[in-house]
Amino acid sequence: MKTAAITVLLVVAVLWLHLSAQSPQTPAPVPTFRTAVDLVTSDVVVRNKRGQFQADLSKDDFELYEDGVKQELNSFVLVHGGRAYTTQAPEPSIAREGIILPPSPPVNDTRAASSCS
Image (cartoon, rainbow, N blue to C red; front, top):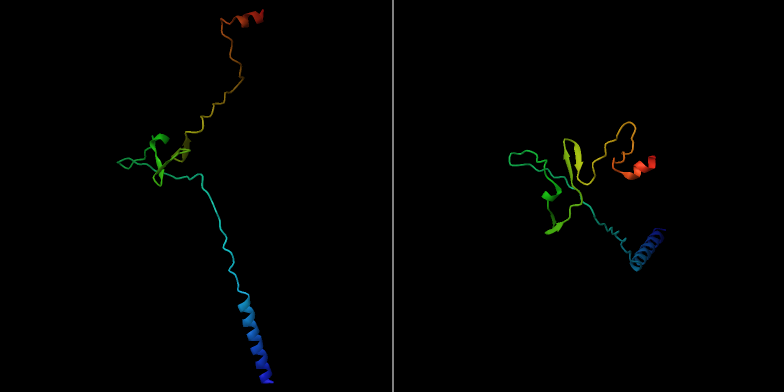
């Protein structure tokens, strides 16, 4: 009985080794991810020789190089005291209060005088 069990185990082991040698396992493919970057933002703090913050700089005062090649600055925002000042957005128009009337025609406009008659 012991010899039959050992024989069965040996046969199973030989079959397992034989089958595992015949079908080599291929490694799982490694996923590849490709990306591109179009915009990089960076904060810059400029101080003068006395260590004071320079707030009077503009976009023209900066040059940006990547690998020795000059890059274009697409936006420039000054943040001072928690407020952001951008040079791209126009100043907001002041909302006028009350009744807004159209401007009156000039005094020497003959079209306005003839249409009133």
